[in-house]
Length: 340
View 1 (tube, rainbow, N blue to C red):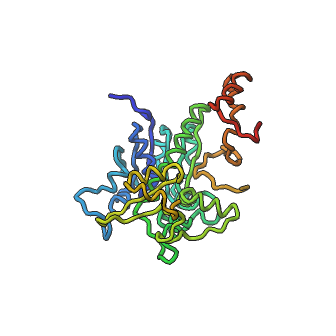
View 2 (cartoon, rainbow, N blue to C red):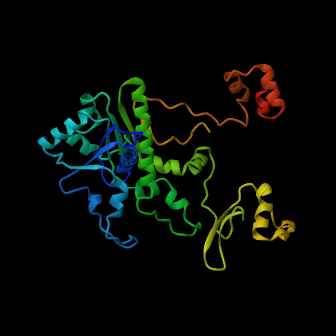
View 3 (cartoon, rainbow, N blue to C red):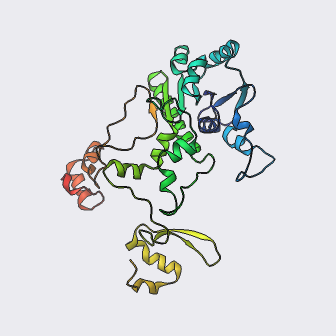
């Protein structure tokens, strides 16, 4: 048997629907022993019915992709006996994942403060719609509401200013959010290896939607007016747009460096003649969407100028003054002029 990265790691997946279970599916892919806990009548997502826009299949493909490679335990956490089973599992687990609404966690006794005393090495991973704190924390939501609609993506991704808001695909925001939660869990496991203690990590659908939309949100935080995207017929640049071919199929053209890539594009199009055509040619920032209890994030600073820290880094790597001067003179290394 091959050795897997997370072999021997015990995970309790007490989450439902998509985003929370996605995090543990990735862990199972990497060898973790994931126990999927469902109520006696099953996770509602297991029984999710089809409908318009949902491909038909003899297989429950949605359940397969989000819950593969796990072991299953049907457990009624509303009963004292069921909760006793859970607590015994928690005492020997490495990771516990939940997206149960915050008020329900209190009733079931599965909050971080309920489980942490049982296992000081436990990593408790929490997924919510709108975060752990504030007046909206108790609210429930799906990726279509908390991630897609509330963060502006629904409006900003419509094809033109006059178009209706765009609809999201099923689970489109849940899967990347699950990856964020996985990253937070792995960071907490890394910290545990260094300190011996577990902790609580969290993310939310809304935080991930803001992260998706970070450029436009950062623009607003920096005082810019965020306008709807122009229609496809009047793009900011003709070299980054969608085009329809003679056979009816569409393709995306995305040329970022006009001066460098324009001649290559003309050669690919076998239209070199177009090259002569005269018509051619903040104190606040968006937070990364994961949190670890008791761990402060580095205060954000402006990104470096090109080569701003070149000399500093070379010195740290043991280069002497003459060596650095030679590297700069040969332009093997570039230093920002304002840093000299």
